[in-house]
Image (cartoon, rainbow, N blue to C red):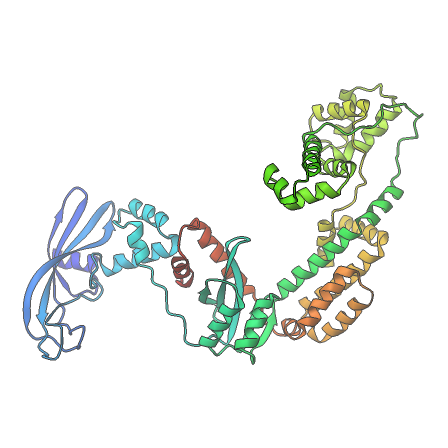
Length: 531
């Protein structure tokens, strides 16, 4: 009865008979005998009739608490009586317990394979030690086998790139959009490789992609009858880049209007003689001066751009910029790169109070005044700014204008998600620059086409953008016209690359967990092996 209980607990539904259980300090040894019917020859599949011999094999089983479990299984070796078969003898296998050439049970192998799929090599080995399982990283990785790629491509195929090393080497991941699973991974992102894969795996009717030209070239070569669908998220991303570039180009308009509308609440003080303005002797300004002197000294000696770059450990574009730009412009640019800090919103008030008091005001008093107005910085920062005012090295107060990226975020977001203050500031931006206003109207119209999938209105939008839009928006419209069919399909059909982007994020997680030491074959195996 005890043996039956042990069999029911340790080997449910498995044809074995437990003979004895030995308990030591850290190991539980279970001696069992196979009771399965005579098996078939692995080569010719003939039913065995004669027993050649018996022997024992040790199998690691799943741990029981803190103790390792070892199954000492007695199995039989059979003769193969078919004369034409090259195999003379073979060993029986117990279904659900043993496999050929493995020293662990089937259930433990399944455990180890699942751990290796989730964690990889070294992390999986560390977890196995905590679980009292004997498995090294090499053994765990050998359990991973990549599934075979299907003979035919899925009906709706998604393709996108991912970086092995950002900026250097890339690969492609191919996804069955309908099933939401990866079908294959390519070692590079060239059009030749993708076209070869499409040729070997026909059947794709719809291909979801971004706007990379390599994908378009490969589809036209290998699958000309497939319908290309441009991804909507990438279209909005390209539109956002065009809007931000427009805001960058017209930043002077915003600054000019902000300076015109700046009104100082403090009454105009009597004039006060201050020391002449001078650049603060910061580290970046001193470095700019020294670099300018070094580069021009070497230029006078007729050194080439490449030689100077190697000598000073600089990029050639940096050397060329220092050669072609005046020192005053470089110093002004270096000064503008200084961070605003927490004091920037209060500098206008401090400057006005300093001028009003003819410089006869203490830092502590001004600190308390701006602290009551919301300042959260230290007193020392205020004192440094006052010292710069007295020395004439304080930076001029800049107009409070939003950055191009912030303006772009207000334009690209749905109107109902903007706060009242954001709507007010965006209105001021629109009043300051008609080009930004036109870019805003076009961007919102295109975003409406994307969100409501109104692809039939795309051509009319392109015509409007090409007529009177800013140059970046005209360039975006021109790119849409070159890829008109795919973009129209993306704004009409429900398919997109959203599922592909999710798998790209999973690829990034796997790649970073392996710290770049794994081969492409192992990375491909982990990507294709579903948890």
